[in-house]
Image (cartoon, rainbow, N blue to C red; front, side):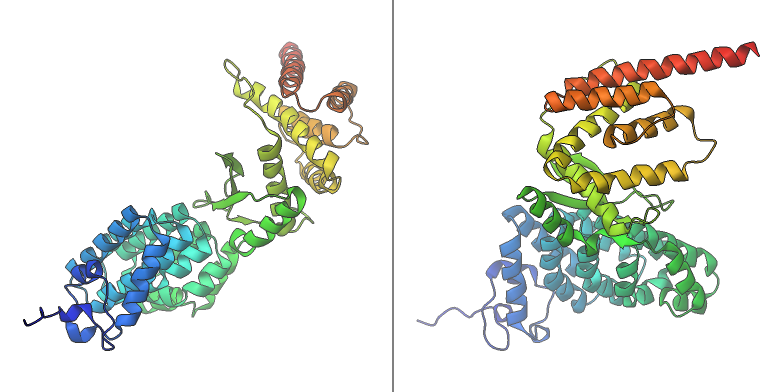
Length: 415
């Protein structure tokens, strides 16, 4: 009996048999164009190792989608090889977003440029380090494809240097500046995006941030593990598209979100800003046992409660690790020295209160503030595990400051 003839797409030059599932989705690849069956097989095996069944299905659907674009087989093979790496870096949920982004780009630029984008996607995923940031990066590419399509190729060629120095927000501002400045100068546009002009390098330097999260993630992990002997999950986040301020650290489901970059704060280096923020967030993860009741409270009342709760959490941390007090105290000292003379009175009081709660040697110009801080520290020495004390002291302090504000307003109105 004659054995059935095997589909030639299931073998490379070395007769390595690929998975039938992969061969089914690679129908757009001509037999002689599959130059290395081992390479494609290895990519698919990598995908199986890092993806769930649903993720693997999305990966295969993406292969078929790349085939339907008709943009060349290099594009398809690049997708096959690179997407498992991207999924490993930022998670498989990025796959549908990537497929959608590539489909949109297909009507705006060439297959060669899209292939370059896919080839650089693992680099972008590694440098950005988060699926949400990578989605923002894909959105930026779509915007540039509409405004400055001739800049995409040189930008891809310079991407390693760009992402080694810029956050996503910085990259966005740098790119949009060039797209706007050279919208009618195609040669100038290409030179700008290739980092071949002094203007491009100058804008890059202007947008450069001091310390990037991606360059210090491992150091921060080791730092927190050395303190608490446990792992903490951290991820970068960005909110600096329109300015250089970035987002504030926050915690969501025990996941610590830190800005994707920190500038130095006075004489405090960026890495120490990261250490202070990471240690503070980790202390909340370790010592916070439940939310403080805040129903019916105003935002201002909640702010005062948060000042005392932060002081309670920090007390628990520096009682065990005394060096943390000195690390955190430096930020209060700098903020008070750099505060403008026109600073809001309530904000100024909150800043001084935070300093007094952390530093027992600090003496404020208002005796009641020193007395409040001393009373709270005494309470912590007796029982630092009770967050209700933070609520009680916070509300009492708010009422005191509110009465002072009302008295000042009444005095001013009678003059």
